[in-house]
Image (cartoon, rainbow, N blue to C red; front, side, top):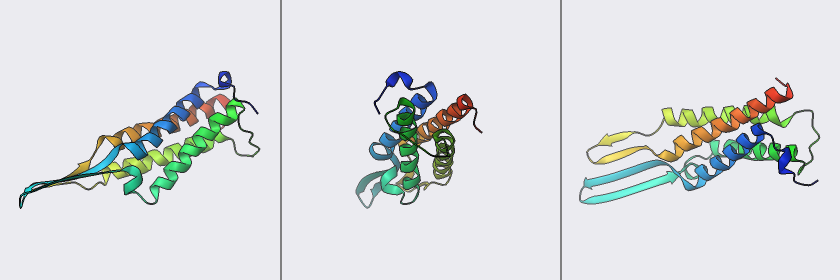
Length: 149
């Protein structure tokens, strides 16, 4: 078992880079923010990352990241995997599920803009949506190359 980056195909590159991007978005970028200004002389601003806000969805996103990175490791020969399920359909399915969960969180988000109180979404959730879509796309491309459905 040795890592051979020459064996890393385009679909695995897409899904693994997207997985790393999703991991970064979950922890370092803010997904939601709340600010209060001018109410009783108070100015407060608070933002939260995806990991901080979500208690259940974050575990699905973390599993998606692990599966996408494991798929790349299997392709390069750094990890051996014996299973009737190929990693590509699993990566594509979890990537699609993660994309839908993030999209749901964008559509159903806390939104308010009343008398100095503002709550809404931040850039991190949009970047996470793109990254999760990249994982699904990379898994889909790998499925097409392997001829699986």
